Image 1 (cartoon, rainbow, N blue to C red):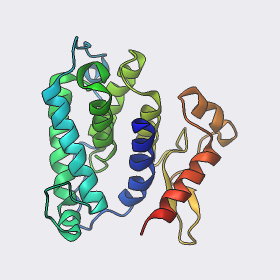
Image 2 (tube, one colour):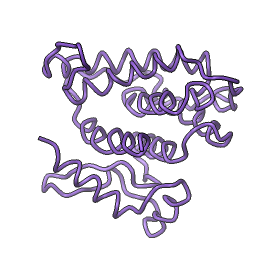
Image 3 (cartoon, one colour):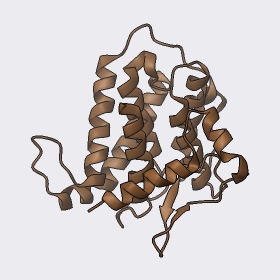
Length: 225
C-alpha cells in the first residue's frame, strides 16, 4: 500500500538520514519554542472536492524532498547526487515556508481537500521541518483535528506526535523515531514512555508491534548502499 510504503520510507529511512543533516542545514527558527495558537487547533472546514492544484504542488514538493535526501533525481532532472545533497537545506527551508502559507490558507491539507497522496505529502513535509519546531507543532495541532474529523491518517499522526516529542527532548509515545547507535544497534531517539504498553498504544492508531517495526527499520538500514 502506498501509505504503508511511504510511512516506512519517510518515518524510518529518512528519519535516519535526518539524524545527520548537511552541515549547512538552516538555523532553527527564533519562534521554534512557541506553542500553537488557538486558531491553529481549530478543525478546518472540509472541502467538497479535492483541490487538484494544491495536491499537485504538494506532490512536487514531496518529490523534491525525497530527491535531496536520497540523492536520486526525478526523471528528466540531471542533477548529481552531490548537487541534490547540497540543495537539501534550501529545499527544506523553502518547503517549510510554503507549508506555513498553506496552513494559513487551507488549514491541514486532508483527504477531502487534496486526496490521500496529497495529504501524505503534507505529512512528509511537516515531518521534515525539523529546524522549525513551531511549524511542526502547528501542523501537529491541525493534523490532530483533521484525524478527529476523519480527514487524515491516525498512523501518520502518531509519527508526527513522536517527532515533536523527540524534538522537545521528551519521551515518545509510539516509538516511531529510531536511530542507530555507534555499535550499529537500533535505539529510540528518546526513551519510550510506559514502554510495556507501547504496543497497545500503537494498535490503537493502526500501527503494528514495536518489534515488527524494529525489524522493518533493520531491513531498511541493511538495504542502504
